Image (cartoon, rainbow, N blue to C red; front, side, top):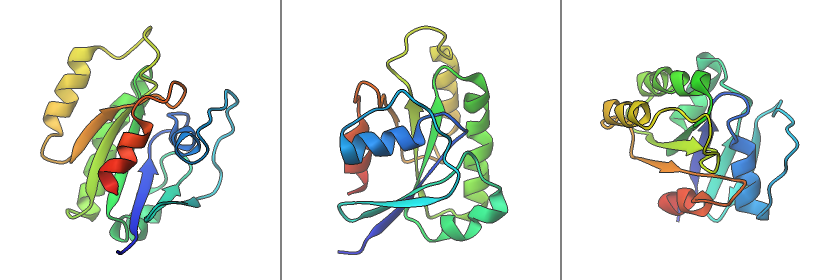
Length: 153
């Protein structure tokens, strides 16, 4: 069986590395240290690319064209990361129409200060033709973390 490549993108602090740590180590850390270099992890037959923040589009062209999936994450409590999703997905689609996009709504355990449900629903509806699926996750509470990668395997 061929290995699948997955790149995880999103603004700084949305939980990309926390998701990977939950998947691989079944752990969560409260300390935050920004990812400074692209790191590749292996899970089953998947190569997972953890990249720093939202990289320059030009830097990602080759990576997007060599992976099967892109996971786009946003923090359900952060308006800036929410507002960045549409642009990020449009950039991905300009590079590749073949790659499957999974939208992750991270930090689903936080109930206060969330983006309004109606806004999130509208975004998902607008992106329906561009994304394969969307999943609400919490790395802290281990909500749906494994399910994300089970869709890929």
